[in-house]
Structure formats: C-alpha cells, structure tokens
Amino acid sequence: MRSLIVYLVCAASIAGCSRSLPEGDALCLALETSPNRLDPPFVVDVAEGQICSLIYQGLVRFSPQGEVIPDAARSWEIQNSGTRYVFRLDTRARFSDGGRLAARDVVWSFERVLSPASRSPRKWVLDRIRGAGGFSAGSAASIDGLAAPDDSTVIIELERPFRPFLDLLAMPAAYIVKPVAAPGSNEGSATDEPVGSGRWVLSKWERGDFLELVPNRFYPSGAPLVRRVVFRVIPEAFTRIAEFESGTLDVLRIPQAELDRFLGDPTNKPLIQSQPELRVTYIGLNNRKGPLRDPRVRRAVNMAVDVDRIISVLVGGHAVRATGSVPPALPGHTQRTAYPYDPARAKRLLEEAGYTDGFELEIWQRDSPEGNRVVEAVQGYLLEMGIRVRIIKREWSAFKEAVSQGRVDAFFLDWYGDYPDAENFLYPLFHSANLGGGGNRSFFVSSHIDSLIEESQRTLDARRCYELCALTDSLVYDQAPWLYLYFPTSFVIVSERVHGYTFPVMYLGEDLSTVSKNEKGDS
Image 1 (cartoon, rainbow, N blue to C red):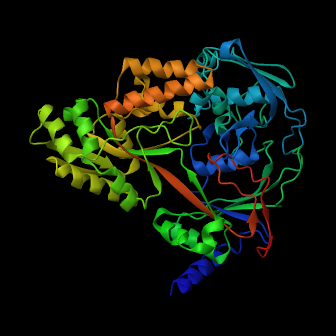
Image 2 (cartoon, rainbow, N blue to C red; image 1 turned 135 degrees about the vertical axis):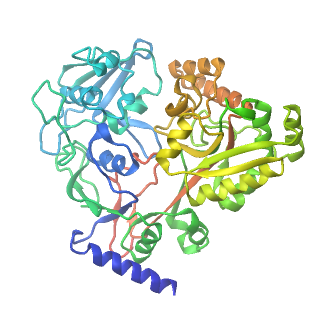
C-alpha cells in the first residue's frame, strides 16, 4: 500500500512539473522554501543562501568542514593586532558574463550592503569595518576602513579586533556582486539576473517551482563533474521522501519522523550521512520576571525535567544533551556535568527560594510537532513540582515580538549559528548588548560574562579564545538562564547514483564541484 501511495504522489508531482522542468540528466536537489531574492545583501533564509553560495563568491568561503578557505581572494594577511586585513585577489576570477572581478567590485558590493538606501537586514555582517557606522547613517560619503589600492588588493580595517571576522566574510552579505549601476554608485539590484563569479550560473528560475544552475564557463579552476543542478521547491516532507524513493531526487534531508525507518533499513546504511547541527534547542527562562529572577528557581526547573528521556523518547536519541549553548561540533564546546534529573533536590531549591507551593508559569511556542511534544512533556514534569504550566501557541511574528519584548515567562526556541564559531553562541545569546531582539531573549545580564565574551572576541590566539568561550559557557550554565535541552543531529541520504557529495557543517559549505552522478547507480 505504501509503495502505491509513493507512486501516486510522485506521478502527480512529476506530471505537475513536466512542462517546466528541464529535460535530461541533472543533479536533483530539494528546497523546502522558495527563494524570494538572490541578492546577497537581502539573503535572509537557507534557500536563498544556498543558491547564492553557488553563484557568487566571497573573498573567502566555508569548506564542507566549516573551515574558512580562499575564494575570490587567493591569500590574506592579518596585521595590526587583528584590525587590518589585506586580501590578494585571484587575478583569474571572472564574473559569469566574462568581466574580470576587481578589487573595486568588492568595495562596491560592501558599500551596497552598508548604504543607507539599501536597508539591508544584514548590515551587521560588515558593521565592524572602520567608518561603516557613519556611512550607514549617511554622514560619510565613503567607508574609511575599506580600500582598493589596486585591481587585485582589498584592504579592510576594523574599529577593533574581532577574531571571527573571516567567518563573517564567508556569509552571503559579503558576497561580491557585479556592479549594475554607474561607477561610484552603490544603487542597483542583482535580484532578477544575478551576475556573480561563483562556480555556477543561474540559467532558469520558475518561481515556486524550480531553479536550474549550469557551470560558470569563466570559472578558473575547471568545470564541475555534473553539467546541471536542479533545485526543486518541495515544501511537504512526505512529498520529498516519495520523490527520493522514486529516484527523482538525489539527496534527501531525512525528516525526524522518518529517521527510524531509514536508519533501520540496512541497505540505507552506506548512503546515509549525519552531521551534528550548529543549533541548540532550549526553553528560555525570562531572567527578570517573577520567580525566574532567582537562579535557584531556574536550576530547579532544570533538575525537574528528565531531558535524557525527552531525547530518547521524543527525539529518537538523535541529539546530544546540551550542557551549555556551544554545539559539540565547535571548538570551545566542553562536555560538563549536566543538571541531574533530581525532583527531590529541585523541590528543596524551590522551597529555599520561597516557592513551597510552586507557581504559575506560561511557556510560549510556535505550533510545531517537535515543540508540541517537548513542551507538553516539560509541562508534565514541572507539574510534579507544583509549577503549573500554561502553554501558549502563537504564529511566528506574534511569538517573536512578545518574546523579544520580554512579555513572556518562558519560551521554546532554538538558535541556529550564523557562522561556525563558539562566539556566535555566546555573544548574541548572553551579552547584555543584545537583550530582546538581539538574541538575548532570556534577558540574562552579567557584567562579568560581558567582559569575558568581549575578551574572547578580540583574542587572536585560538587556544586562549576557546578556553575563554568554554569558561563563559560554564559560568552561564551555572546560572541556568535556560532550561537546556539538546543539540540536534541531522541526517541526509544520498542516492546510490551520486558520488562525492559531502553533508556540510554549514549549509553554505558544499559547492558541488566534486559531485558526480551515474545514471544507473554503477560506480
């Protein structure tokens, strides 16, 4: 019966796309959402970022392992105690229209992100450049810390040292766009006909349906092993599964609900890749509201919930328990002793804090299968402590506004890393400069933690920096600003026809250059 359903779903989907999908063999991938703009300053989601990472270059990029590697820049030097970056461009780099990529194009692209006229939501990626603030405010005509002394050299000077700056330059906002306006102007758009210097070129785009990429014939280091890549927009998880099983998709990110089935099939084992996500799932506790102001209460909440059982039963065991906010895949992560599941001790802490009879608590969430299961389990555990939980469900915009304004007691949420560095799981989440909408939605405040985070940001020595990150994470964990839950693990299954695909740490990290495909799955 299941095979019949799979067949019918696939047949309907293929029939619906047959008039628009290109003919012939291609590497076929899926997008869960439809890209809106393929314009680097305005990239705000995974689908847009993934496509842009293939058609544009940055000065640097992420490798599949999450390391910063050369892209349009062949080399760089860090000078002046970490405030000056000198990039030497690859003189072979060409835009997809054949035009040479020059240093002035980098300056133009960065100015466009920071221009007051652009209203880019990603200005923060470049706002540490000296003079960026005045330029963005319209009080300066240029950016003091950005220069192109010749066609192949870009110099960037920062206001102060920021060790993860190279990670920021690998993000979409820092991609290099072919200027589309008069010289000296930072107006223009790359939305409809993007011209980048990446390995791939957008050849077809049926909005809401599919995108087709073909190799950039001007890319200097050789053609990819597949002639075309087709990204199909398939929002429904079951449809993606059906299409993979019928052979019309080559890579499938396995939905949580189907993991056990895929992992339980021995024929799938050599085809499945896993990756610890750069994501932490938690229930934020409002540190300045009601009983949750007291760290004893927050610790009691952590001890009242059997997180290991939640991971085992509700997440299928496919996650790592969080004993901090820094994911295991990142330097700076330390596996420390978790809050034990100890209802008796939790009860004593509540009594010490003056809440012998418990208290009322609202936990807000967005409606989702994962959130529903986890929050309802937490509700049951806390009721045993006398903490009477009311679950409030809201759509994303209303949820985000209420949480960011500090109007809620607690909230179920996760944090995805913007770049693969421990700093990105500490500064936005716990520095007092980011209270509310900046990321610190638990309204945790500690001047000591602030100073440690700032020290780690400006410390160029990697070992010392990650020691500071681990120390910071430990000190925050001791204050229990969250109910710490888990770091998820993601799984993909790759068709037996496909070779050379690497499930990247960062979604921006796979350029598909080494991927090949055989029609019948033979090696």
